[in-house]
Image (tube, rainbow, N blue to C red; front, side, top):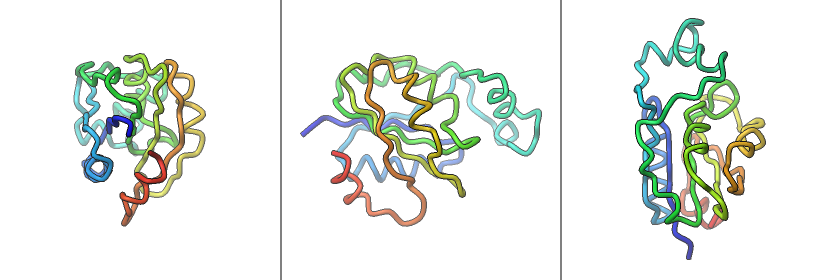
Length: 154
């Protein structure tokens, strides 16, 4: 059996809860991806054109990470969970992918969203995977049978 890391970014706690359930079902280690400067609720207000998340997206400015302690070299598979922002992964996910060497690793994407699907997220993130193989996983919205998801992607 491969050694799995569930790495996640969560702005509101929804993705965190799903990532914890996914990690528990997979027997995976858990790692929280955090930007160096945490987002406030005001900075996450996508309806405000001057909010931080909007400014970052417009400039394609990937925020620096709080740390680089994920130890991805110890894992064969990385379950990567995040909310969908602007029909894609938040830019902090690009920061995470750029920070590590994923050669020979399988990166399975999982996301939460209020209504969007993956869109072109997997295709976009392939350019940042540093040698890793990106696979589109599942949207983790609603009631999920995590045991079935783990069987499908392990």
